[in-house]
Length: 116
Length: 112
Image 1: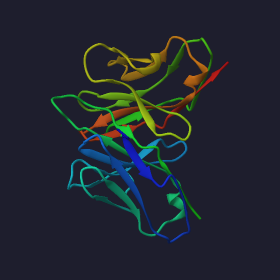
Image 2: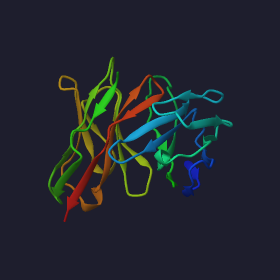
Image 3: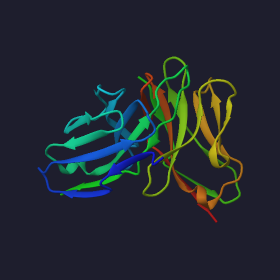
Image 4: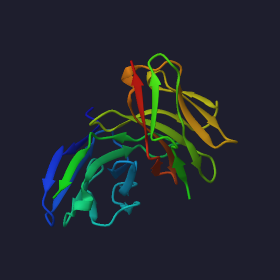
């Protein structure tokens, strides 16, 4: 199993450009997440998808959109990139609640995005 | 609101000495607590979790954590630190069944 994969690994954008970050998991997990990591701020949740067909806003959704394409794939789109969106982006997946078994998340390797 | 606090930005310890990375939490209801580790240029990796049962939880790489309900703490510990333990450590709490709230992280530096 590859686990959680993300593309691209690195990206440099100019202000106003758009791009889509791709994420896929092969663990048959129900829930998927997008986080951003900034120094001293830990991980902040951008959007999540509790199950296929649903998406919800997290803590910092402004400037982003998501698509849960199918059970495996969850993409994050920046329509008009801003310097404040310079960050490291992580995708994660989670099996969800099963008989009171609370599970850990599995993370991808991250995408380092710089917006000039 | 549920929250997690890691009061130390950095912890320094000599190799072979015991280490503790602190975490306190604020949750309504039963806490479901996790520790993750992040090595440079990598995603987070799960270390251990507390759901219920024994207050001392054992995890990967010789780490353990002690759940203390009265002090609302979930400190990460290891009896003998290794240089290879140097990394960024995150405490987290599961909120509402689907969302995990992370602390700001503590950088552990183990000196040879």
